[in-house]
Amino acid sequence: AVGGDDCFVLIDAWKQSALEPPEISGSLETRFEWAYSRAARAMLITTLTTFVAFVSLSFSSIWDISCFGAFTGTIVLVDYILAITWLPAC
Image: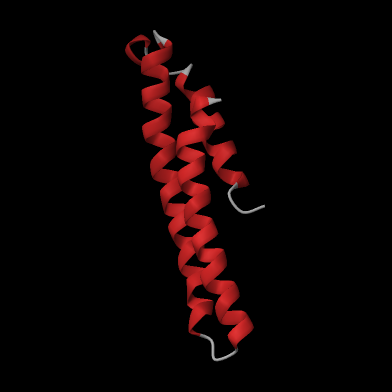
């Protein structure tokens, strides 16, 4: 599913933060800050490439494909916003 990889990236960054030096792994706050900043960049890059791929379909002369590209591109961005706000809150 689109955006499913975002969950894995954030959870993996969280697991990796436990292996970092004590100034990072010493508290939950510093672990989360490190994991979030690391994961957010990777998630943004993968989201942007997926977004561009779907939005490129909106330039199609076939109306159905054009609408699909615009709609799906929008959903990819919404998914990213939800993944970086709601997933860490859970």
